[in-house]
Image (cartoon, rainbow over all chains, first blue to last red; front, side):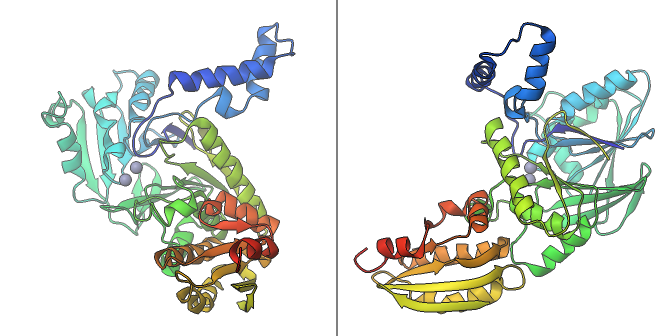
Length: 319
Length: 117
Ligand SMILES: [Zn+2]
Ligand SMILES: [Zn+2]
């Protein structure tokens, strides 16, 4: 199974600006002074091996959308943030318009940054496609219909050509969908959000975004450790620094890198993937947070090594 | 949770020892509370001497955040001194270095926060 990230930014999509690109170019060119970069191979090696990801690349700006490629006939996606637009293009390239497909979308919740990509997800305009939107919220269907209602969008939900179904899931119990055993879990977030634990092919993945953890809540901590237990990858909302998450940004519904590491260490998770990046952070800042989080994992390690990565648009993980 | 308390050079110094984690954070907060209640405008500064702490987790940091908030609400002075190198890093990574005035040593803290400081 493969996990592909199409949107990793929290709250609202962002794009690189001209001054930010200029800074990257200046950093790259400054580092090249004195090197003989006179062949394209040398240039590529310099870019790929010498420059940091924050200089040579970008964490990207689309809001939440993650694909789980099970290798099976039916497709699995978490959330429909703005990353759903490039994901839809990718599906069209892979399967063309003439071969109807089934898509299972699992929704953490229906805040705008998690549904805004749906009207731009090309498969919805293709007859014969079947799209099943799974979630635990009573307002699931209403939220999807409302964002496309006039005067907010030119194409009403009822005009979409694909067959679209809504499937209300019960939290706390496993559901067998698309060859997966998938269990939703209620999380602390305005209007509620749900994390998903997926078990399939001997692997486990947890998708847990827009989830605030009340530091000091013993029962909540124990429940999340159980939910994360021995997972291969935990995709975790690490939007804020701990000091902010428990003071000025308390009750804003997000968590921190510190709590992510602590929970994953206690649950013996293999890899923590930080996600739902703060839109105010530039690439340099996200790279710095990643470096600091790796250091935090290292200095607090207690017999179990936790791999720490930071999601970016375009990242592909082998489970 | 051991919390040693002393009056030094016009400040109240509280010195926790060991780990401040899920097992001990509540005891730490409870032991700190009476000193925090006295940390008001015009009172002596409260200095948390961290030299004996070799590990602090998010719950321990939360106890310190609660302390900072209460001291601020009471217009009292609170400061942190003598973080071990590892705990210092945890403060930086969690951005708790922005929450407190932090001194390299208890001596430095007393010189700035104590009587005449
Ligand atoms: Zn969100
Ligand atoms: Zn949200």
